[in-house]
Image (tube, rainbow, N blue to C red):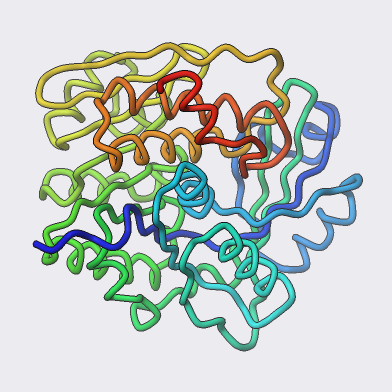
Length: 332
């Protein structure tokens, strides 16, 4: 098997984030569940919610896109596959992701709906409440896949959020097959409990069929997937079905289970949590970059923790510090 050109190629929602400061009262008044992600099903609803936002900051986002941006910031070679529309937000997304050195070749889609956007309300405690209009991103067809890019990636990274719409779900199944045939690894992030409530059966079958090499979850997602709130039992059950299970636990750090062993690391200390948007995405970035660099599981977990701590120290889900320098200072 030839050496891969890419460390990580991700398939996910191509979204432009709009972040605004808010307070708990507004979250309650608007009928949102604090700290969660909810779908907005029409552009009119998205426009109405956007009109209620305070001053906002726009930045290209999307869970898997944030992750590969983090891997690239750590020196990895990455590609991204996701659907945008032929509109202003689509142009912004494409420019942003290419500007950080990520290959992005997915053709823009003509006509409605518009490029996806995520309206993120950040409360003073740093919690983010997301409202996502998926727009064009949910119409990623199998025909838009860059099969050469997928086959040439050491790791194919898939976003659970994108499993919801039928068309990209079929595209991701096809991508898994391409990656497998090329002898590569497949990583999957569960993304959110609501994804598991809708597609937990699919996710469990992917694991049982041996199609997932690395599974990322937070504690709540792991409980939902394995249908138990006993952490040790959930880890044991999930780890029996995937070669590598990575679970983040917020301020309690993270664990990775592989080959019958469980490795745990603490969370990185941070002065103040400003915005938790992208914490899990950047944790995955650090871990994947560590694995691509041939580091130990413990060091890869620590890289994830370092990246997550940096991202929650400011607004937005893209790093503002020199990530390679941060890791070098702490791990060498």
